[in-house]
Image: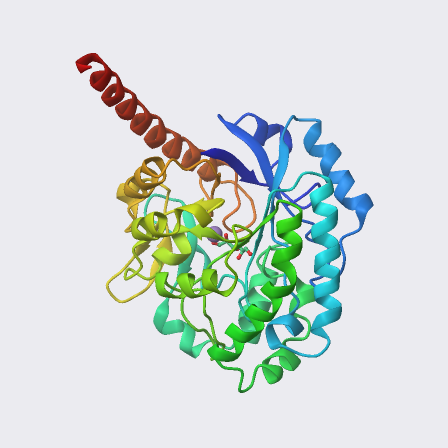
Length: 364
Ligand code: DNO
Ligand code: MN
């Protein structure tokens, strides 16, 4: 497994490249141009700027997260072709700086969704929290306001630019069903995957977070069954998955170990994080440690080890600990601790496998 760390860009992240460089085993950044609105072609100069910033620390740029998909593409509007053309031009440019994986998602309007960004925990830390019963009473407009007020920095997934047109967007999604969304994803993939293929890039869809419909908007990347359907839309290694254990793990019916075994050839990028799901369906983002949540992190790392995983990994959201002031979910400390948990597990499985191999050879 090749360890990476999300970096939100110079002046846009509380974590520096110099700090990232010091986390054991991190070889690259997972990056994006967060100030470019969805649908626009990424400017070459800005791509090169990140390239030289990362190069100064010997970090690679192999993974981009995300190139956001314009809402008109998800809505299937005639204007989508223009935005798909821009998407394709961006893919071609990213290939020129050696990008191998592009993570994206296909969630209408909202990316990840929580009811509380700083839920106070007993140990003094705080973390992102989702209260199932509250979500029904929440006005999405107020939620967007409170999320943007709570953070001075633009949060990935909640870019004000994207959310400016909320009313219009909600209207546009009236009557758009899950089947429509499947069709629109299919249309997008038929255009984009062949280009990615030509450039040796894997388009890796991120699951919906949480993996069920919110505010009456359809969501489709929610389960193993639907992942299979997604992969079937275009049979190519370039039509792939970002397997996010925290997003899928918010629904305890999802068996992430089974997903790893089922789709091992189509997972170039893994997000590994834990959540604790309560009996009433609420969930809190915990430390990455296996025992702290309800997602079987040790089992997941073992499954990746068992299938000989050589893809990219990153810790996902972390708690806010030791008084760190950071974007919700994207501090340095807890994610760095998460990495050490993942390495600890990986190294131990590696050692066990080596010993078993040595024992086998000794018998022969
Ligand atoms: C949640 C995060 C997401 C992710 C985007 C990718 O688990 O990893 O915010 O970055 O959905 O498009
Ligand atoms: Mn994720």
